[in-house]
Picture 1 (cartoon, rainbow, N blue to C red):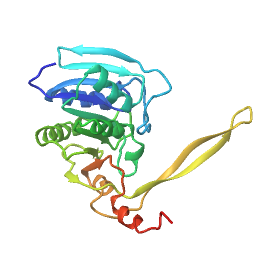
Picture 2 (cartoon, one colour; picture 1 turned 90 degrees about the horizontal axis):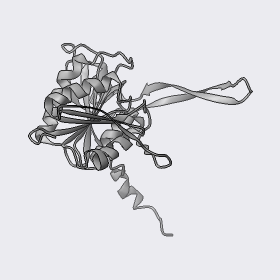
Picture 3 (cartoon, one colour; picture 1 turned 135 degrees about the vertical axis):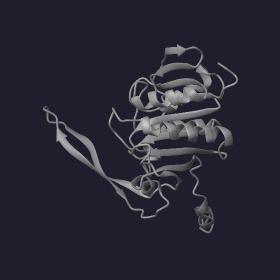
Picture 4 (cartoon, rainbow, N blue to C red; picture 1 turned 135 degrees about the horizontal axis):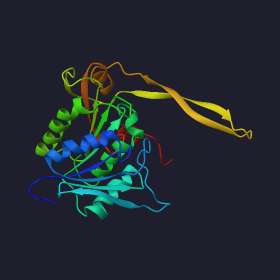
Length: 259
């Protein structure tokens, strides 16, 4: 690997053949030396799951003049990051980027997202990390309009670094490059899925279920990721993996826990 360029780990949750990660690899190859370790099949909505009760496999896909090395992995996005750092690269890269996800990972979706879990895992490992997502679920989505923004955001992070224990969740609206109004630093909107289960029966009479539901945004603030995307902006949310509700500690300390 060339030492004069940043070493960039690329992963995702849609699988190594997804158009989104191919677009991301192309941009990263202009910036640094790229190592790709990504799932060999779609792993959407796997969250921060890891493989502990099964074997993991890595297959080398290709290598191009010491600029790009690609590996497919049988595990989850988080498995990919762990294996990349410990077995493939065997050192911490200068940056980890995850995506570009086919579909947004705004608001509560960050909890379920394999894309963002890979970025969070990199952050846990002490690696600056960014998760990229496009608000377009089409497999043939057009990623060209967002490539220049991916490049500029990546270069900014490489130059300035990120606050300790923070990774970035970047979501793009489905717009042309010139239609995007700019970038907004946002907070995560208060939104949730109102879930339902479609109950059906197999020909043998056994019940089975399909998860369905409706996404409901309960947050009317103009400083949220949902507002930014709805109004033509790229949303950038700083995400932390310390899940402690620090604001609740003082109140809980007033309870009579030991009586």
